[in-house]
Length: 380
Image (spheres, one colour):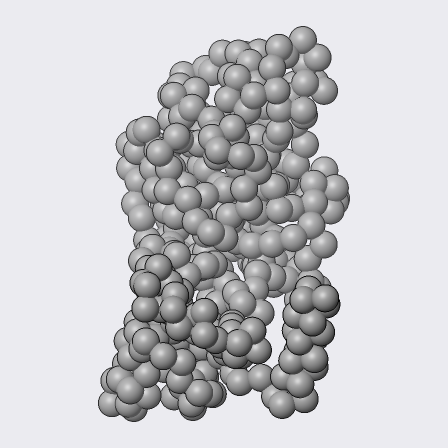
């Protein structure tokens, strides 16, 4: 690596404190951060980029704050690496920005507020521009003449007001936005608007040598390989089970991009099979410690299915019967069955499918009284 080049790691969407179906993901998140720390320690890497959504919510739990504090303290104080961190739409700008001007002297750069000119930090022949999550209204506060509230048009206007990039430097942009009209999305992301209203055209960033994106949880590049989402630390919803989570290493000497995959002690998986096969200890042994969504292929409810299966898979977080929830509802025979099923029986089935357990008799009696009361009132 040349004397003036820089090598950095790009991560985003840590969402520290995130829960998956009430399961605390913080231990898994710590595993990921430990692997980032080890890469920074053992390889010739100069710094770390964190592209927003540091926490999962504006007021994070104390244990999540402690994890971030330990992580950053190790990188800054022990490894003497630099960190460039922006806020995302899940973060509180004011809280994340606390003491940021003091921390700059240690090598921790935090940017949470939009400025008229994008703030950048220069390292040798590299300039790192830091643009936190913004909405069109934030742009119009700084530029009242901005003619639109459309995300893409407002962002284009904002970039048009910036001083031209100096291409004697490698120009790196960190931002947290929805970039790319055909980008892969996930259930765990917080939608900001309806349809494509929040989407920004990736060609707006063509002049940058690398764009470190946050917001979308699937690792991917958009438009060009240097405009890239590193993805979230872990799998935060069951539609992410096929995604390979990790981090990106970028070398500014030749703009080489390398993707690294995290090694996790627990995976997030979907097991789709009949109850008999899933309840056989000889099957699916490799998933017994994983975080699991079970999709039973049985065509009738299995009493106490989730309790039985949790004897083998203690971390079942969801159990559904796709065959009972999908196209079979339109089957005439099934519709005839529904017409001859009481409301109480339908509620029992609904409760079983929703919770994976049978409703107790006392609760069922209350539901029965309520439903029968409603039917009698309607008949009168």
